[in-house]
Image 1 (spheres, rainbow, N blue to C red):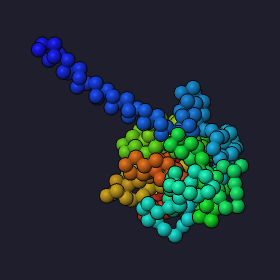
Image 2 (spheres, rainbow, N blue to C red):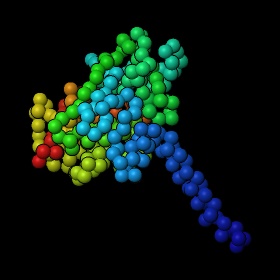
Image 3 (tube, one colour):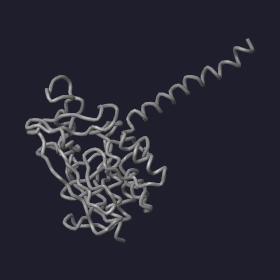
Image 4 (tube, one colour):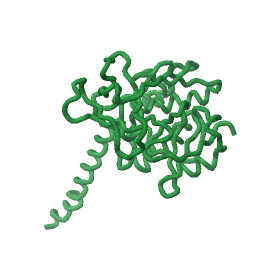
Length: 275
């Protein structure tokens, strides 16, 4: 009887430890190769930028060029979007959904007249998918400024495309939320800012959209006044970490979208880098 009583605490701990192991494996499954590479460079003291998956000009001092496929405009409804398939046959269940007004990176060497080959980072998708060419807008976004700090911040942000959304998460390795994504990216360039949306907004200078620069903060007055934040890229596009309940890229996580997307039609732009 005495030995049985001693074993009970151990038996209670075992399921808890197993659950922790499962959570760790799930995090690693959705930690994209792009984010893994960026994290490894940070650990080794190197730049977090990368030249992988549909980007060019990522070297220091060169403009950042992004080849994008953007979901159709005209609808800001939650959940609406274009199916992305595993092959150009367009059969079976889509592997992902490209939401309206949001973007994925294009693989330029795998194009057809009817289909656009897009990058889907992470083991969940095996790295590639196809969306109908007629359903997306093709855009090449070139980001380059006279401010090397802004360029570095934007390049670092883009290097984490595909990293999962985690509510209240604060890790560039396993996932984070909108404001922690912004604060961690700024921190990579040695700039400390608050880690909540409203505090970040209060730190910056309100800007006119025509004067906004890459690296500025986009603030959305949503979520009962708490707000959502993103980073301005230019040409009406931003990068953010979004997606409630841990949705994965491209419906959630770190991704590029138009400034107006998914019901978020009202926004303000703040400069946290010039003050």
